[in-house]
Length: 226
Ligand SMILES: [Zn+2]
Image (cartoon, rainbow, N blue to C red; front, side):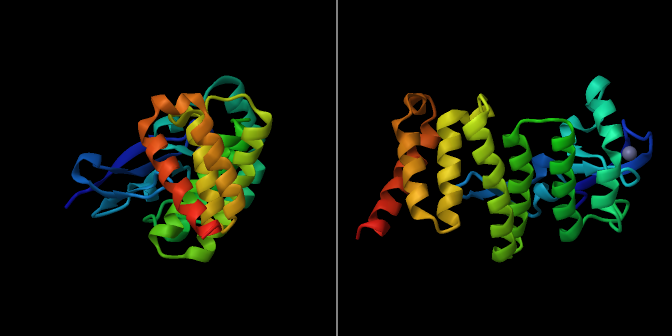
């Protein structure tokens, strides 16, 4: 069905040339979206291939940013190469991507983001992708491990950093954190964050977030106080 095509890719860190897997996105069909905005596609999941990893130095980045590394950030990744090699050791990124390689790609992506001093929500986003990959494979206990890691970085971003949180905005980020808490069974924290999201004035500009936040708030309220 040629949904995957191989692209000649050059590593900006070590100069290695390798082939990375690309997806023909227009041949995929989105079948559903989870409450935490995870889209499910058929017949295959593009998430698996969303982080490119250099098979030689283990530098890992989202596909669209992989070849863009320059200047000071490039220097930082070169200097931090030892920890990437240590984390990637034993994983062959020249072979066809499978579940284990996909999970490792997000861990390496999170470490690369840390080395690049990216905001905490970007680092957390790598762990969220790992959690979603586990969900797609039905591994709930590993999904929870990565959801907890996601929260650890999302909490850091939320408490300490002034950031716009991308397309989601602050209200969407509050909602997302509430949703992760709910999935991990902490309904009180989930309620608190859903309420903050709903009370946030900017939510009026984000109708999708508003609808979900109100739905989930009502559902969790009903569970907490039956
Ligand atoms: Zn490399």
